[in-house]
Length: 486
Image 1 (cartoon, rainbow, N blue to C red):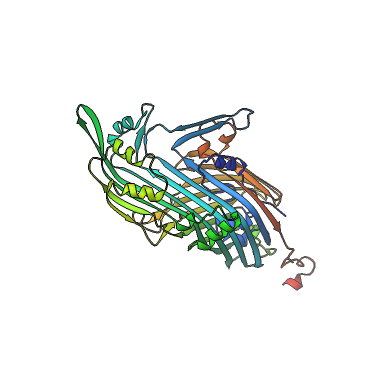
Image 2: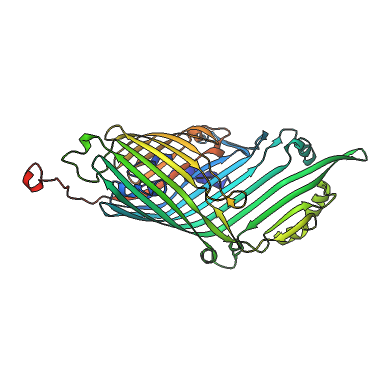
């Protein structure tokens, strides 16, 4: 038996501190034959090449985190009196935040035959994106007027936000397509049914303002801004008079249904000594393993709440003072906000019907090299892409990454040392440990002696129970009685 635990004690701590998180990237387990029902989310074809017949994943957690909006530190984390620091990041550049939390409620994988495996999983997923065009923030940004003054060169300003939170039911199937002794080709797919729980989408486009003199005083006036903000209707169903369990049931029941698919293939290459007369058939010893997968082709669906809206243009004389007078102290709910907004923009209308938030799809290529019976090295590359037009749809973003992971593993023990590079946070060194049924790790060791970059930390924690049934080898009696075999 074996547990698979994804390192997230510290990440939970960060979550409680409202840090951003993002996680579908478990570098350590990529390519491992012991990932089981956890591995199907990295490559759906991996369930048939898993060394165990059955495994069950208990609730587990993983997250990856990136933001350059703030510098956050709690350092050193393991000291008696760690120092907490939070400050807005300074400089003139685009701001970005990518978070993804994944809680695996349960996962099961079962080999129904030596050539076919099936699996099932139920996961709670949360993804958050916030992006802005470049703006300048310095120590001299002490008030709104100084901020506007130093950002006249940043126009037109743009920003968008997306948050998709859904419950997914995942079915997996993998099959051995080709077995030629010297090479084995497995293919697999995951089909997910997604129940939208909470969807948020907003954008600010083409924000423009001008500066002029009035009675010898500098005056700023907003000349244009295009807004879109929508959120799902079931987000408003929470009723404090009901029990939490009943509220959760009501939100899930009211959720719209979306769908997504993952596709994968694994090619195992053997040398001559691994495919001789004693070859056992689909034993999955290999010299090289090449994996290809396309993940998260799909979306979660939501229904617009009635106060979702979009607007365009600005009415004349909309100065900061006028806007503060209109919006400060008189807004108690979103309906009040919409009533006030309609008095300052040129065009205003409510959004109706359903909307989709598309998952951050990615293509993953990984190459796994077996060095000895227990030593391997894996190289993995992930490239995000979108299946729809980003300018006309709500689409989540993710970062590209490259990881190189040496590992030593047996059925009951594993040590993983991922070296990773991504387009957001650059280079990181992590460590993962699997001991019995427990897997945990972090993808950035700076959390143990860090001052200002905990916002870019990720980790995983899982429990995975495994069983391996005994199967009679095809050539078991070859030495005793070759005639029985030949």
